[in-house]
Image (cartoon, rainbow, N blue to C red; front, side):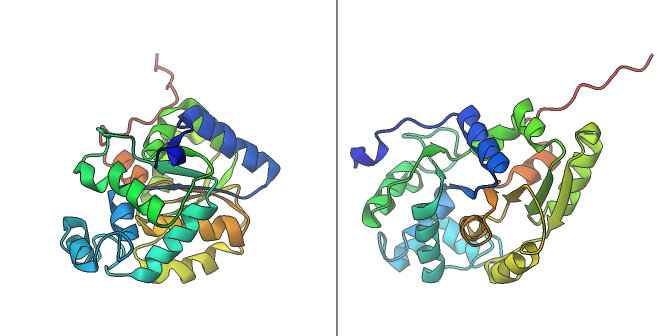
Length: 252
């Protein structure tokens, strides 16, 4: 398996440079990320028996009140995720013995490697899964968004738009919010996005983000990024994300 991982992880700066270049050239770009949920979805039948998958806490939660935005088993989801990984510009994956992703190691890098080997997936480039959380901690990320139109697909889209307007007023970032809750809304959301003009699409949609990002890049020629739980964590002031903020002038 080591031959699949013989290239170094891209840094956040590397990923930012790629995103900026694709925005400037108006060329499609897809950044997707693999964590425990994505690994469990990928493992359905191909790597683990369905019953083993359904015994995981993640799968059990997927069957309770839309907690994961998809209900397992779902083999169509798995197959679309495989295609998304195969076509992605950059894939975020766990590190070996990853300590930043707070879950059991059996759902992280070892399972990623099993799934990628089974489906013969060799990413074009890789970075860490939590690149989404670290990009907003950099000034260059917000400078990249300055004066841009950004579509945000997320259940947190509207409050996050207000957050950006309040905290980055001089950056003139125009956010177009589109609410998303579950797998069944994918086609509708893609239809909503299609006529909209934007420089970048940020997608916070759980495991469904892989499918949305892939479709946005390859059928709508967009720059699309799996933004994960970042909007929620920022809004809740969770210490796992510490966004860069412009310095405010002190009142005299």
